[in-house]
Length: 292
Image 1: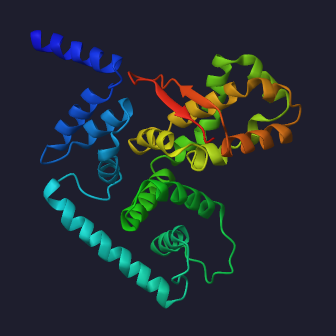
Image 2: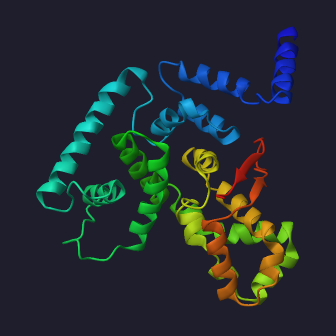
């Protein structure tokens, strides 16, 4: 009992002096010391708390299946991943799909296409919508991860997760958004419906691209912590907060086209700070802000 009291006192003290994540970081370090990492516990932790930046990439790689749960296999498997990366890279150079001047994210896209059997016959083929999603996520991930090989596998496996594990959930998010908005601000919802705007909101940017290019790096990482660990519901909370933040401006607009254009512009370059309550389960508040 004394130990629990001391721990609770420390937790309250750390939070009051601005070190809210100290106890959480210690808890994660304990989880990461296991010889075989417990995927379920790592997912639970990631759902409840923001991952410390020093461990984020490691946890993401484990949760996305880039490396196995067993510590002793991490180095070996990453070596295989590097070999595979350079094999794909070399193949694309041979068939002249990439060269030294090809932007890194475009290299990632062609590698992913080749791996998934979707490489077009030649470079003249226009990009598909799914390619645009991949590039948006790749550009955001490139800002977070220094090693291009790690970055490629994170992007590729994250996109694969979105297209498989989260595919059905992502399709339900617009309906869930409407349900939450009805609770938070029925008047705003009625205005959007009256303008026939609900079906035309920038769902592609918000949900398919997981706010890539919309949120600054620190906020986007915390959102992706939740998505990668198994829940894309956080995307709805961020979208609702955007709508509530711009409520008065949205209500002043009277067509779906104007509302959509406004939200697309604001979502891509917003100057406002937002705070989103991540209110399911026992998760703490998630503070988000937009680019200035």
